[in-house]
Amino acid sequence: MRFERSGQSQYSIVSFRGNRVAVDVKQQMEGMAVLKPAGFIEIGGDRLEYLHHGPQPADAPALVLLHEGLGSAHLWGDFPARLAEATGLGVFAFSRRGYGASSPYPLPWPYSYMHDEAREVLPRVLDAIGLRRGVLVGASDGASIATIYMGSVRDERIAGLVLIAPHFIVEDETAAGAVAAKAMFEQGDLKPKLARWHRDVEIAFYGWNDTWTKPDFKESWNICEYLPAIGVPIRILQGERDEYATVAQIRIAESACTCPVEATMMPGIGHSIFRESPEDTTAAVVAFAARVLGS
Image 1 (tube, rainbow, N blue to C red):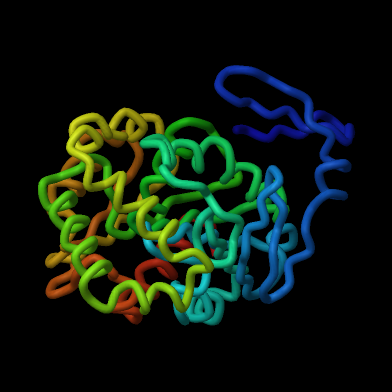
Image 2: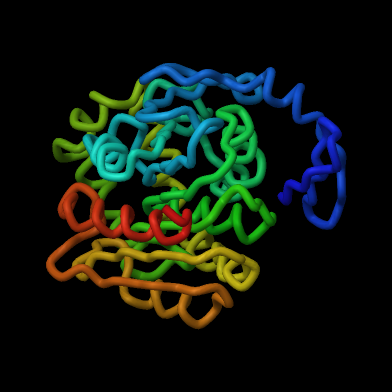
């Protein structure tokens, strides 16, 4: 998706998958949400909960946070506030369908659920909040969604990607981690912990888990094809003790991407990097955002 000014007109030219379409910018801005610290935005008939810190995305660059497979806007904890305080930028986090207090996403989820979010939902969210310039910060599933999005369209509003514990393929460790999570959900204390944050915890868990534990999903799901088309710098953070992935994910990005890729393996850290090492994660995102946004 590429935005070009058309003289003094109120129209912009959007390039989407090779097609050039005139968009009424004035109308788009009039439909833009004015963000509160917390609330809901309407996307395609669904209500998506969000949290927002700092200036409006229409007024200043923003970090847009895409949560992990069992996450939500609130499950980022104090990470969004840390980023906002350290950067002075806007920070916007939302819960996808089926997560948090957002609209339900009936089971079973299709294997394409991350592709669907990247192609159908995320661009509408960015439009709805009035994003002019920013960085996508995705964790786990959110990192995969960011990868698919920026590998599918050319959106010049996005200056860079931060991919936290990303998945480009399903490794043996990925499937094994999902199987272990299912045991913790059904036999341990994971279900009540997650139920604090998700309106329908069964949808949130099984939508994700039933997909990642399927053998045919493991054999068929692969988003490496999107990596060469990404045209912005990428910052990857991965835990050395990630329960769902190995260094192979980093090596795939380094090999397939034509854009700059900076990757860090974080010693002693598992999959939930921003929870286990919030200071180091914040510092890495802050430094990257300053570099790609020119501030």
